[in-house]
Image (cartoon, rainbow, N blue to C red):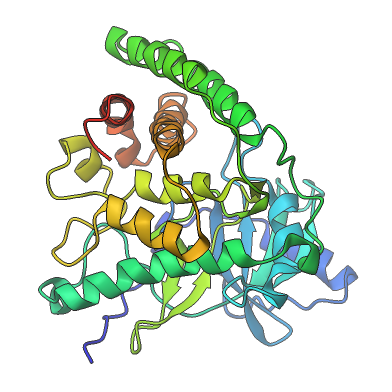
Length: 361
């Protein structure tokens, strides 16, 4: 069995976003939790938004997770929502790390935060390590694992983990469409090209004209993709699913569509490759259509209206990159990757239009 190399997952000390660690230690001590500062917390290098740190409490490694420095889009980076999910979901879905502590008092470190169980594994983003890049069987296995994890999540009965009150499944897709249309307009205000504005108008019209009713009320991750899955470097088995701050209940096909909005194929336009989110263009990975059919077969879902979910999810992904670009323009981050996200977002909007026209799956 080939194994994945374990890349260094931490930021260099000089690049780490500082926190009020001694103030945090005092707060946690009042909660009966001991924060060890003899080993300074380290910041994980991955991710575009939330800030995640490896800390040590009561002699055990854990993760402190907080939102990025503001301003934040409405409803984004919801620590309380994520903690509510992680405090119970692990009982039925063992790939969800256990939530350990939530603090909504922004006076402690300047933002709400949570502490969650630490799972040690690796995440993959846009490429496979050289040792695995030429092995189509490994690629197929990783892709199938993603779909199987998603179907396992969607089989969880929300009642069994006390999450039957999470979100508002009734009218979920309609609200999601209107919400992302609104966010699209806000995200590009003041800097977008005429083409970007026209694409948003066209996609908004298409979504309103082709609205479908949601089906079911399963637990949704709402940002499910490969780099949110930790993998054992020896066995290549999944260890954890991360980043639950957008979790809710709704139509499971929307979760699938979000995954496929990152699922690049070899012949996709440049924007899908520049997004650099998953290595699915490598030989061996299933196509988007094959992945969707695997999900549908496992859960008995009808894909006849799936184009709506795909267009909405691709719009969503485009808007997320445009929101990140807006943060960069407003000085919320100095990360140079964000400088090109406006152009990237426009390309993803064009791909969403191609989906709406039936040119691609």
